[in-house]
Image 1 (spheres, rainbow, N blue to C red):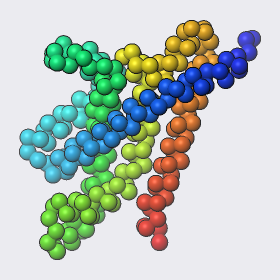
Image 2: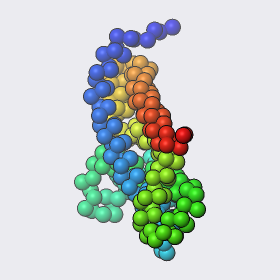
Image 3: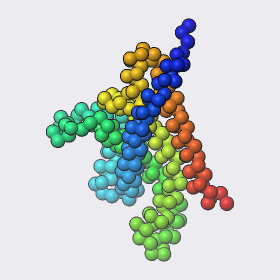
Image 4: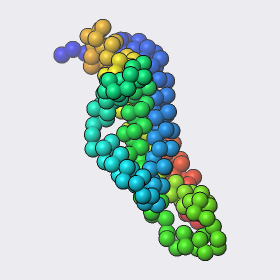
Length: 224
């Protein structure tokens, strides 16, 4: 039975750490853009804005109903065929676009559910004292909806970090792509992927701790 090459694994850690920032950068930027888009989609769904609501339902259905890998290929290989101006699109941009569209579809439904979950009586009370819909959304609904949605949104961010591993299929050398190259050069696949798995695990555990902290802070006012 072959023993793990621990020396190789330790030597691999600093090499792979160089590519971790790109993984986190793609996930963070994708999360920010997805959150903005998801909020817009959720508001359209809640207010049932004519025409836009139909488009929103179709958008959510498509990006929830197709694999992320297929969507990445559509952005990277498909769009340049239709729009010649997009031929210069690189793998990183395509990955961020794919992550944004894919996860915004899921997040929009979570945000919509959180908004709808706010007690209707508070909406009626706010409108009765003369608040506009914009003030109602900003001062009453969104702060409470945020508390409800945070755990789910953090889970999506964790999923997004893991989903960046698909970027190597577009030629992006992030954490997973670098691991694949190192493993192919050394033929120590098991050791290489164990190191990568532990790195992803540590990042996810750090985010899980942050999620628990945010939940505690947001729920503090309601626990009295």
